[in-house]
Length: 398
Ligand SMILES: Cc1ncc(COP(=O)(O)O)c(C=O)c1O
Image (cartoon, rainbow, N blue to C red; front, side, top):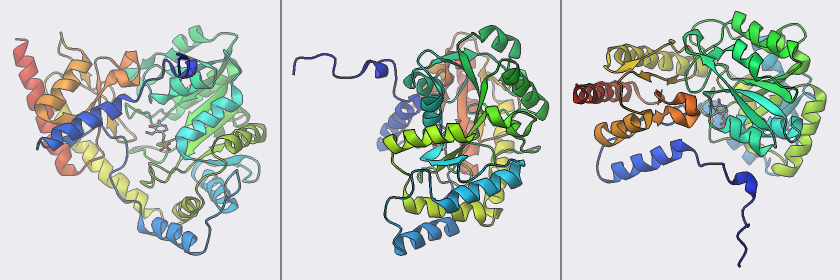
């Protein structure tokens, strides 16, 4: 074939995830016999709770092996609606206002494909989960990065957001708890951003991937604020809460026209989400929640250790204390080093895999992300190695 235009232009500027490259290099080092501490992986290290697995196996045994409904099995939509009600005081009709998706990632994709016309702009955090701007772009939209306030749990700088709004702005995306910083917005901050969305007549897209993973304080949804339900789209997932990243179960909760449009997309993208995985998800949502509490208690124990050791490490500082998810995003205070160089040094010299802050946007330069979804012992060893390596770097600069 002679053509040079085989691959669609829309993918020209879509890179592979940086995290994948780090993980591949870590695997090579391990193959050479080196022990690597894996702070790069953004997923709970726990096994999925046994009762969830048993429900999926049971569904298989009972013959639930055929196409499920495009919008998800009724039992799962009902379980999601019930949890939104009890956890956040939100009422969503399971028939028309909830769509089951293949994880939060597909929820985001279907949402943007359903709401954006070509050239529509979406305000996104300038430090964020890598796919946010890419998915907006794939849906024909234009991501507009907005600065965050590092000393305010990485809330949007709303004065900057105001300057970024144009007649084409259609939505603003909020992710709290926030990947990669662990920042959690207070009720007052959520009210500010909700008021901002209302003032500029924007949709508020909530990435709630870590909504159950808050250490101190309540889980509050801006969808519950007066007048906000009609302009909010919740993109949620069971991936992190129940250590189910491989199951690929997420959801959209929004007004019926949006869910209707996203269901049309779903019919043409995936048809429907894996049948028996959905039965497992029902057991997760309706069953006992002590598994979530014990995972969170362990994450909190690790968080305490990681913060304590990080504060003592030379050449690093934390602007906000992370209050959610399982991430910390220290800033490198040594002059003369980019975060790419530091991340590479930590992996090659100290055997600690972290993610360069630029994987989360250019504004992440000068930081790296640690995911403490590894054992307590590995947290300790990893942080000790980081502190020693940062000490060597500091000494090398005099
Ligand atoms: C902020 C955020 N949103 C969405 C996702 C996607 O999660 P999943 O597709 O597994 O539900 C992730 C995964 O790391 C994330 O960090």
